[in-house]
Length: 413
Image 1: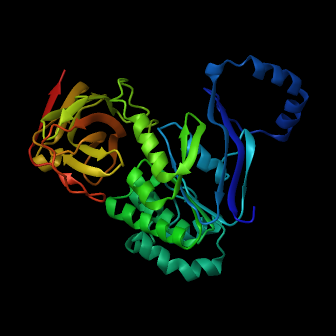
Image 2: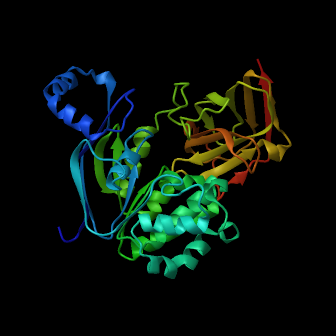
């Protein structure tokens, strides 16, 4: 056990669907103890439909200095696992033991107070993560330089964009110099340059002999950073093996064609988003050939009139790397929709996509610099078949090619 950083045994997390947690006073706890036999009987009468096991009997062991990825479909239990390991939430059963100081980055703005400035939140967040004041002062300049927010250091963070939140939060967590660093998919909020910078920092942490757990849908980043992976599915740990083996298995099991369901909530960046403008369906051909023309259609429902929004489509390969991006703004097209149902169609011609499985990020933004109405990520759209004309396309893991030969069509019902 001396060489073990994390030991998890039988971790399970159970949620009652539709139930709202409430705060308990001491009298509530005492009365529940008195009623415990009845409560146990009620639990036995619960139907399986009313219970969700976000994690179910997950056990694993991670050695000191290991860089470990956690992959799986949306809803597999990845974020729940990190929240339990970070002690944000308690497991319903099982336990996890740690050896060393723990640092985590789970959600945008965790540990931040919106009314405090960036400077004040550095001290607050670092203190929450266990840093002493002298340690914070010694590393303060490095945190600010890494986050690249010096200009906004004395501005309340409630005025920060989500990207600025992430930069500051990751800078604090990384400079904590933890023995164990847990990082969730929040890095997807940052731009490509910052994501590369963060991955470089995590690689540096791993090379220094510290332990890294990294949740991401970017399989290219997982492959580059980690040596082994946990593969979760529907709350179960399917396997724990070398990264190359796990990634290949995951690709084989998810390459079954586009999803037929029109429910985009499992792919929506924020399923709780109550925006008056939402995408309801995305359509594309199930298979195309190299350099074959194709269309991607986004169906939209709007509760209000929409003026001069920007539509975005990003195509990613099976490793999560961006290979192409299209902004309607680049083509001089701004999305103006009446209330009701509409469709936004992107026509693509002569796009040299290599054979393989592709995924789509699609979004509607108020402008290039402001918040999104709705964003769908990692939606499986099509598979490119080799028609004999394939030539190797440039590998661009940190950038995307802007499509030139395309057209946008906007129609309303």
